[in-house]
Length: 521
Image (tube, rainbow, N blue to C red; front, side):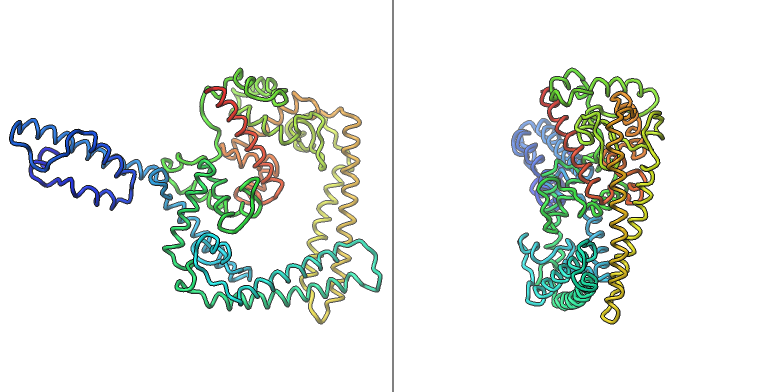
């Protein structure tokens, strides 16, 4: 192509810049300009008179190089769209917007709408802080104040529901429940009405959240910033993106119980729909590769003494497991033990998990451990817990039925149910406290033996890792909350304890890897 088109004047270098930028890739332009600059003299559209053939060949090689670069770099940008120019993968953006629009529609249906608008589904105050011109009028501020008052009334009703102080007057607490809940419903209804009036005033001319072009650019910016900040770790980047667009303060860890539902859905859909070449650019919470990172002598020089106490036991156990099951990174399992027990072989949780790997009694038996302390009163504690939760749910449902006509009678019934639930919770705690005391006094449980705790904990975690197809975050969530809950929530369950467990273990693991990497270098 190049010699013929060049000689015919069909290929004209002056047309390259607009053609390049029509592809929207500054990186492509930069590469081509650099190639052009260092390929020799500026290419002329006419061959020189002297040495015609030589110049034609030399020019042809230049053109061939440029054409190769022009074809190659767009291919790279298609495979790795987020690399070039900090651009945003269109599929990731599409999934985020679709999620926001679905949740927005649901908020209008269930009354949870709080003024969030646009493709980003962002509130007016946060949008303003992000640089958008928004409508913030008296209607919105009054609606917001009423909704905040409603929440305070609801909290007051709940406080009276659970209070164990004796009534000073007849049905004192029940009356407070009824009055507070009726006030809650009135404030909520009026606040919702004013919020919808505010919504009716919005349009792209008065509020840039509704300008799709501006909102789209803001989404791009937030996604790029989030990915950059968290090293392209997709879950953490999505969590940061959500926090930034919803005004959530998350100084410790980006992922929390407020944003995990969003993160689960976007992460799951993107992982399912994106091509492998695109996914390769993101950290999807998989074990990092590299033989040097598996050098145990380097680990021993890199880690603190407390972290090394059980390293040899973990490694020898894994060596025995390798023929029959998938490998687990010893550093990851050390991070898990650090969070679970702080490397204390006699650690016992408030619910009866014990040992270095904090295994529950029934799980230990299921894993094949023999000498496990599991008295009848321990099982009874969890039977009581089921009844306690049922009573609590009934109490909240009863309170929700309060009306001005029969508020007091319903409130009396709701309080009785809640007090029964509290009594059950106290009985449960008494049994669990007794269990911990008896377990530590006897110290004969197999879970207290480091070798057994590590072996069975490793086998259990290895199985979970296999079930979750190598997804470290989901395996950690399953270890903490159970595989059934990961399946139920299609991702990390929205429990504060489980999310924090995932965050802490991941943090310890990254710190270990960083120390090892520094030693390698």
